Length: 158
Ligand code: ZN
View (tube, rainbow, N blue to C red):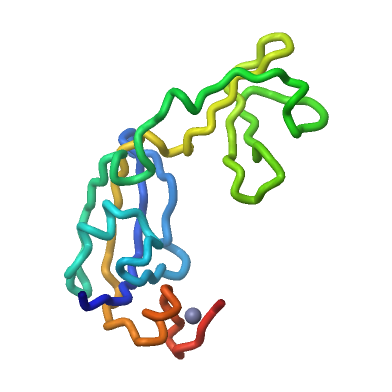
């Protein structure tokens, strides 16, 4: 497969048309196809797109951040949580020392127990992207071996 480095401007909205994220007003983002840098459902629909194209891309939750998993909602004793001080509904914190530990949301506090949701905040949310293709070029051998795009001067940012 020929893999390209694609540069896009994007604006991301949820089904209520609320703005979740945008690159407008900043630098466009570049990704190497097939490297998992952007969500699968978006990359799939942009494959082969031409420079200058402006397109609305709808990505169902299952191909974005996944569906919600109610097994990820758990009741735990307040005393086991790695949080000092006051805890409020709506707080998010990392559930463990490990930097890959999931970020959990406090859904409810009932006495000495806390209801936590470890789903990704965008799990179960269908996403709408307004995308403009800014540039497309073949990936270099170096980029393919590193698994990420390099800057316009070919410099590696890692
Ligand atoms: Zn590199």
